Each structure stands twice: as C-alpha cells, then as structure tokens.
Length: 304
Image (cartoon, rainbow, N blue to C red; front, side):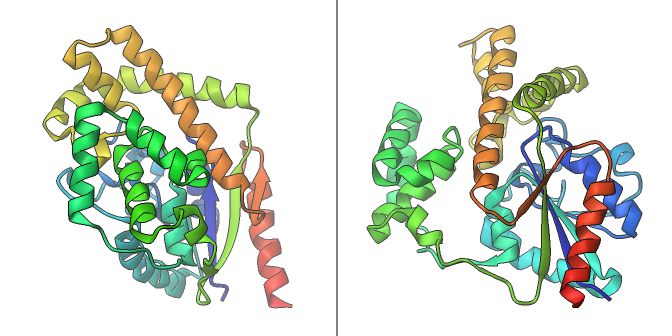
C-alpha cells in the first residue's frame, strides 16, 4: 500500500478545494486543511471554506474547528495534524493536504529549524507600536531587518510582522536565513501539485469570489465577529476592510474594492512562495486527470 501525501497548493481562488475533493473521491481518501484562515468555524464565508455541498461527503479535517478566541501556531498545527495524517495513511494509503498557507504546509511536511520562543515584553512593545502608529513602522523595520521575509510575508498581517521582527531581533539574524535547514520528514512521501492560471484569469476569479462572498453575507459575518477584531484570524483580508467601513473611515464600495485589491496582492505573494521551490508540479485547473497521473507516476517511481 502506498503512503502518499498529495499536497495541493495554489493562490486563493485557483480551485484548490475543488481539485482536493475530486482527487479524494477518485482515490477514496480524506482531506486535511492547511490554511490558517480556514481554521475558524465562525468565519466560513470570508475564509472561503468549502461548503457541505462543495465537500460532497468527503471528510475534511482542520477546517472550521476553532473558536475565535483560540489560536493555533504552525508548530501547534503540525503537532496536532501529524497524528491525523498518519492515521489516514494507515487506513487509506493516501491522504490529501490542501491549503494556501505556506508556513503551515511547511510545518506539516518538513522538519524546520527551531525558532526562539515568544518574547512577551518585546511582543507587547511591537503590538503597542502597531496599535499607535499602524502597520507602516512594522513593515519598514522588517524590510530593513529581513528583506527576504518582507518580500513573501503577508505585509498586512500585524501578527506575522511582529513575529518575524521578534525572531530577527532576538537571534540577530534574518528569519529567512533560519529556514534554510528544513528537511523532508522521513516518514512522509509527498507529491506536490499546484494550480497555475494566467494572472488575468486568476484576478477575474478573485473579483467574482469577492462579489459572491458579499452576496452570501460576508458583511453580517464581519459584524458578528467585530468584538474579536484584534484576533489574528480577523487581521486578514476581507475583515479588516469591512471593519474600516464599519468605523466610518471608508464607504462600502471602497471597502469591497480594497478587498479585491488586497486579495490579488495576497494571491501574488502565495504564488511567489510556491515558485521558490522546484518540487511543485504546476498544472492547469479544470479536471483531475493530470493530477491523478502525477500521483500514480510518483508512486510508480517510488516502487522501483
């Protein structure tokens, strides 16, 4: 029996979830989510969680399983997800990992160099700076300390910025240079598949998805979550812009336009992360035949 981990990546709105479900149905296997935005059960619309209809009865793990007052770091995710992944491999021989959070995919599939623990005093100082002066000073400091991380990080996520600065200051070295020692986990056999779309098509998909989320009740979801606005899960595209609208600083149309723009920016960063590694197999969306061939070819190569 193979023990293949089918890893599906790609920028937001590229069709990852549909491909994962199609492959799960074909092979009779299950899906593990690796997208930090999709962990929260009260944020199904803004994070693009697949609906029950879209899942088509395929079991999904680590999607919509946390409350808003809970946090999950990449390291914690890996500790919790690895036993689930091995259980699925023991039972089915294959499993699917799908998501757009590169950090969480890496944490699950690679042995990463350890990073220093949180520094509460420094973190509180940086958090206070963000609350007082906004994102710009954090962005400027990280760009100075670690240009490599600054190019790929979600620059609109204060918690990611703060953690990166914290590591740089604590160790005296850029975070990007401390991730060079990652090693594949010896007990996993992954095949990496990512979806590749022309930029114009991807951006059109993003705009259409944002319109669909608004029509599905994203504003109501954001209002319901407003009291948790300082949580990491809500300092993300879709919610920040609506919170600014609720505060009266921008109108509704401007908020929706910014959601589209910031989602396009986020998708570009996701693509940058994917293209840094040669192990990804790029394919066009629209069917599972190419992905099935990649998986079966990988398994044949491994068996020889």
